[in-house]
Image (cartoon, rainbow, N blue to C red; front, side, top):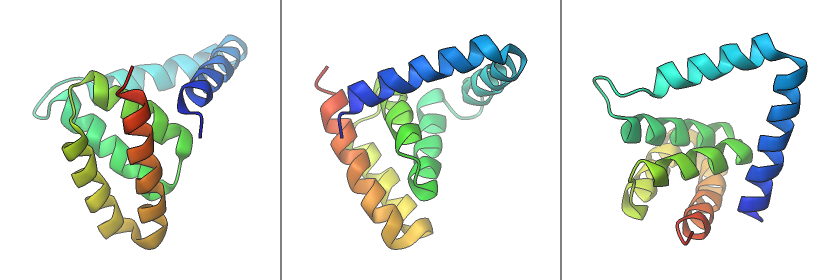
Length: 112
């Protein structure tokens, strides 16, 4: 998968959606910011949780965005690997396959 290209395409699509449906897009954006803001858990931990859910729900685009955010928050490959482990526990074989996509994504995006 061409992760950088896919993320850029989805960002463009989200911008188009936001221009046409600003109230919904702004509401989701506000929820996103509030949910991932540091609190009892740090942003990195919250992003790893979001990544685990993306893997279990089998959303490739979500995986791309949250891997990128995990990297920006300072997550290591080992932390992402353990996140994949928990996702596989909760999501079984399909989560294993999306976990492999996740590690591929991490390797590509972490190289800059």
